[in-house]
Length: 234
Image (tube, rainbow, N blue to C red):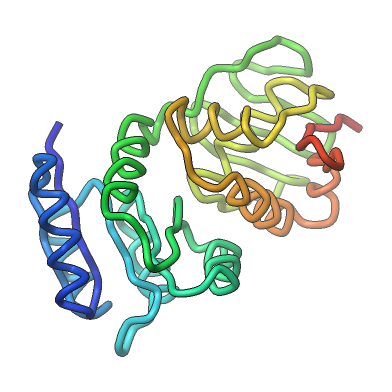
C-alpha cells in the first residue's frame, strides 16, 4: 500500500511530532501550515489520510473539508482542543471520519489511522439478510432507495449527497430492517473490528444522516434508547 499522509497543522512542533510517529510507521508524510496550502498539497500528493487541525489561519477546518471533498475521498481525522468543539466539528457533516481531542497520544493517532486504512472506502460490508425489497442491489423501502453498487441514495426521487461514513451506516442499518444495532456493532461494521475510539462518533454521524435524509427519510432510522439504532420500514 502506498502510505501517504498529509498533516495540516499550523503548530510546527505538533506537526513535527505527528510526522515522526507516522514516518516510523512507514508513511510518506507531507505537511502544510494552513488550509489553502493544505488543499494544494492534497491535490498534488493525493494522500490516503489527512490529519487536520480544526483551528487554522485563514481557511478553517470546515472550509478545508468542503474543498477537499470536491476531489478527494482521503480519510480525515480531526484534531481539536475541546470535547464540545469536537461534537460541533463531527456534526458539521463535512466528511471527517474521526476526531481526537488535544492533548492526545500520537500512538493512539497512528493506531486510529491504521484502523481506518484497513477499511476500504468502496467496501461498506455486504448485507446480512435478504429482508426488504431489493431490485438488483438497490434496496427500496417506501420513499427511500439505497443503491449499494453506485453508492447512491434517493428520497422521494431526490438524490441525497452523503459522506462515505454516512452511506456505510445507512447501508448497514438497512441491510437488516427491524434489527437493533448497538453502537459497538455499528463501529465494527463501518469502522472495522479494531477501532477503539469513542462510540459517540456514531451518534453524531447518525444525526447528520437524518438531517440529510429530510423529514420523510429520517423516520427510517430510529433510536432505541440505551441500545443503539434500527432501520424501520414503512
